[in-house]
Image (cartoon, rainbow, N blue to C red; front, side, top):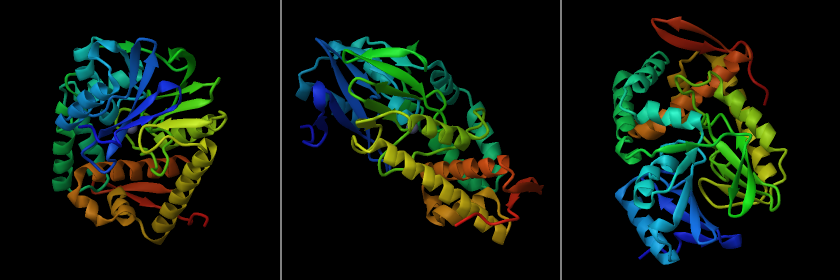
Amino acid sequence: MTDIDTITELPDGWKRVKVPLPFSLKWVNSYIVPEGTSYTIIDPGLRTEQSERVWEEALQACGIGWEQIARIVLTHQHPDHYGLAGTIQEKSGAPVLMTERSHRYARRLWGGSSEYAEALSALFLSHGMPGELMQSIALNLESFVEKVSPQPGVTYIEAGGQLTLGKRDWLLIDAPGHAYGALCLYDQTKRWMICGDQVLPQITPNVSVVPGEEADPLADFLESLAHLEQYDVELALPGHRDPFAGFRKRIAELQSFHQRRLSEMRNRLARQPLTAFELCENLFGARLRDNPHNLRFAMAETLAHLFHLKNRGLVSSRSKSGVFLYDSESPGAG
Ligand SMILES: [Zn+2]
């Protein structure tokens, strides 16, 4: 039986399905949107035996047949959102809608080439990551291929356009920084925002340096928050945790979190020069050595802050025996 907590009723017949994840985020939010006699699914989740079972049970509980799924919409390409898209497409025959840039990223990471893993390894090693930890990260990365397979055939939608969803017109908003190619969807009649992972309650969305993408993702993320802040939002539908009100307040909290983190890094580097890996352990704790998944996010996020500081001329770096050492002449404020 489906856990009583798995399906939440939202206004207008929308449903939120908590699709389980085998890591600390616990679940991803999928949304079922009624379209008359058919349904759109937003972000179906990661492909695992458990998540496939949850979908079987959830659709049964809602009285929805696979053939009634007319469309699958993806806010972004991360495996916990994208992973089941191909499987549900196989069962339903539904088109999968995402941006071309998101799709390019998915093919690059899970399309059978080792180019991305090698580039990530070179990046992390040149920033002080010990080789044996990099190996466990590479293995963890590889383990995601089966969690996103089969990969879907994709129909492109793009930021700046509109999408009709649940008989309402939604603006497709470019939302870079957490994932390039990501979209937020905004409906101005009811003032709902489907956020993906760009704005999350309680959790700070990860902002990572990703080889082959833009060099200063934190600048893009902060710019995106400043843009999203302009929308009047009554109900935000995030990719994790629960739907929430107070969208602007949450954006302000995320902005001040990053400013604090940037200051803290400058303070630490003003005391002594450090590699990105040392700074990462300094900030997140050495316990992450046992969790390659979280270590990858922590390291890539540390790099995102460092690259942002360096871009703004607030820290400097030099290479010492092939490893970058970061230094700050002046501490950050606060
Ligand atoms: Zn994500």
